Every structure is written in C-alpha cells, then in structure tokens.
Length: 499
Ligand code: HEM
Image (cartoon, rainbow, N blue to C red; front, side, top):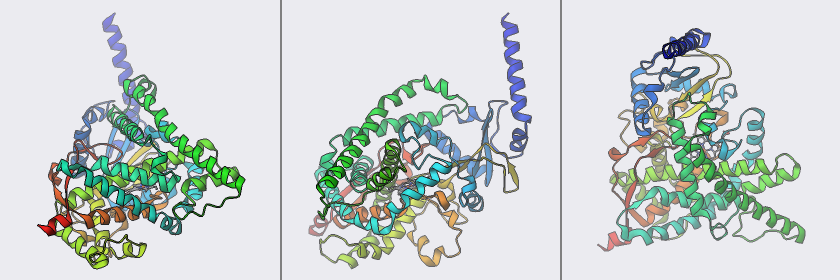
C-alpha cells in the first residue's frame, strides 16, 4: 500500500516536473545560465538559507553568472540582471513596469498605494500625486526640515554619555517625524503613538523578511496559516489606526477652517501637505478614504525608511573616512563661517561636495538594493528570449559595484560624481532612485532631507568610527539592512577645538 502511494507521488512529481521543464517557458528558461538546480524544485533548495546567506549568495551568483542568469522553482521563473543596457530596457518604458512579488508582501499594509499598484490605478495615482513633489511645494517644507534637524541634535546631545549611538533607530524616528509633518501636517505632539508605530513597522519588516526566505513555491493559503502571517495580522491594525487618526484629524481641521472661513496663515503651518492634495482630490471624487490611507501609508513607509537607511549608512561611512569628513566640513565652513545660523535653500545648492558624498554613499549603500518587475509579455534580453510571467530582478547593489564603471568599487570616492567624471556614463549604471517612468517620486525631497540633516549634524559633531564598513553583514530585505546595529560616536566640535 505504502509502496503504491509512494509510486503515485513519484509519478505525479515526475509528470508535473516534466511539464514545467518542457513547456515553452521551461524550454526558454533552460537556455539561461544559473546555479545547479534539482528537478521540479529548481533552486528552491539553494535559496532556503538565512537572510544574510541569501544576500551573500546573490552577490556570488551575480559575479559567477554575469549579465543575465536565472533562478526558478516549479512554475516560478526569475531572471537576474546587472548590466545597465538590460536595466534600461526594463525600466525605461511602462511596458515592463508591472509589480508583483515581493511587493505584494506589503499589500496587507500598503494596500494598492503607488509603490505596489499597477496599470491604470498606478498611472492615475502617479499623475495625481506628482504635483505634491513640485520643487515649489518642497521648498515650503524646508523650515520643517531645519526644525527637526535641531531637535535631532538635541536628542544626540542627550545620548552622548552612551559613548556610541545606534544610528538606525535614531534617524528613523527623525525622518518619520519629518514625513508626518510635511506629508500629513501632523506635529510631533499630535502623534503620541509614534513609538509604537515604529515598533509595528519593525515587526512587519521582520514578517516580510521571513516571507522573502520562505520556499517561494509555498502558496499563499499555506502561508496564511503560518505563525508569521498571524504575527503580521496582529500588527496591521496598529499601523492602519496610526494613519487613520492622522487623516481624520486633518480632515476635521480642514472642515472647521472651511466652516469658519479661516485661512491658515500661520507661518509655521505647512499649508498644502501631500495629504491636503489627496483630500482635495477626495472632494472632487477622484479618490476615496481607502485610497487616501493607502497613499499615506506608502508615503510614510517609503519616505522615512529609505531616507533613514541612506543617512545611517552615510554617517557610518563618513565616520570611517576622516579626510572626506574634513572636506565636507571645509565646504560647510565656506558657506556658514563660524555662524550658527540655520541654512537656507540657497545654502543647500552650494553644498556640491556633500552632494557628491551623498551620491557615493547611495552607490555603495543603495537603500533599495534590488528592484523587481513581472513580465506580462515576452522580451529578448541579451540575446535570450524571456517568457512572459517571469520575474525580473535588477540588482542595484551589484550594478553600483561594477568595477568596469566604478574602478575599485568598495572605495569611497565622492569625485566619481563630479560632472567631468559622470559625462559619458550610462545613467542606468546609477539607479538608487530607480529610473524611468516608475522612478522614486520623492527623490528631490529625499536629497533635500539628507542634505539638511547631514549638514546640520556635521556642523555640530565630528563623527567617529565604531562600526566599520567591513563589519557590515547585509541581509536580504526590501530595504538594505544589516543583522546588527550601525554604531557611530558623536564628538561635539566645540569640544574638539577647546581641546
Ligand atoms: C534616500 C531616500 C529614497 C530612496 C533611496 C528611494 C528609492 C526608491 C526606489 C528605488 C523606488 C523604486 C521602487 C521600485 O520600483 O521597486 C522608489 C519608489 C517610490 N518612492 Fe522612494 N526613495 C527614497 C525616498 C522617498 C521619499 C522621501 C518618498 C516620499 C516622500 C518616496 C516615495 C516613493 C514612492 C511613492 C515610490 C513609488 C513610485 C511609483 O511606483 O510610482 N521615496 N523609491
């Protein structure tokens, strides 16, 4: 009886395996190089590793198999790209900008917000939200950035006695508060639940990582019964309530103002927040309450986490590059002299060297280490026909470390981004904000935020190394993370001079 049962199982596996191997997609994919695979399961066994090992193996496979290679499991096919020309082919057009896994892991939280949505919905929302990122609007947020920079400096001062500071939670809270005030018009005292919101984001991040490393073929209904899914369902209400309350408060405030005819002319008030633009659209009937929540959740997540990650890695690296830190400070000295005054927008545009350092840091530590797209039609890439329904992973992390484009790629050299050195470089070889029609909508705002916070910190503190670049152990995640804290020592600059 048992033998017959095993025989039937074996036959079923063989038939299904043969189907996936010899159907059109299987035949086309089989021509593409990739790590050794086992029948039917493909690379699922090779991918069943801890998050840091997956990260490490992806780097190794990118080196071994080069421009285009594949991973698969049963009916799921993925190809992996690192060549700028292939990246351009995918990113430069809306024909290949469909998103599916792993972005769908975020759907419970972000619904069909801009980051995750597709087709007409994405197009309509992108058009609706683009004006919110116009430079004129962003400039209005500048005073908020300066205020939060001062508050961050005070927080750092209060933590100086620790000797070293784990910069990720420190900066994450600052960027989240900035996003709440600029995007949603909510001041810090109006959001007492911010700490539990940060904890919930952290928990949901852990769930996403567990999902990323689960054997890919595990269909969603099996996943739905798992412990991770239960954990995820438990934190989602906290996340949704947080934004729901902020939206409700803003809506009530607007209604009150309309009823009383009050114009918000308080100079400290950010007038047209991104949320206001959405609420105006709601009044026109182009978006509903659920849609607003999806976009607000998306902005908060995309806006604060990626920017905090960029800043945290940059602070660690600058702490380890004393000469470069000195050059940034010379530039700041030229702009501000010994004055303690707040920066202006014009000052930001003078910080050319700092801008090169930000770019170099995002090259080495791209907050979004890979992008993924789902092909809805066949495409020829580097001479291979890639079947539809294939996932295309673009490895930003490796694209930015190509020694042909960036000699001695691990070295921190801001001059790589001087205009004379970027001339002639394929723009798709540097894509920290992605590129093409589905690029980061918040790119200018992010750069403004990083410049303001970083210049504010470096005017007051000298950064000294605790975590070294060679200590970093990255893990596979949607945002670049390490499996340990990123520590930096802050030494007040007046203290340095008095010594
Ligand atoms: C250093 C900071 C940032 C980095 C490195 C970054 C990077 C990216 C990348 C690589 C994408 C494309 C994702 C993909 O296609 O898979 C993206 C999309 C997006 N980003 Fe950013 N981002 C940053 C800051 C921000 C900020 C401050 C905001 C909002 C205020 C924002 C909002 C978005 C949104 C809404 C999308 C989805 C765009 C779409 O699909 O049309 N990002 N970002």
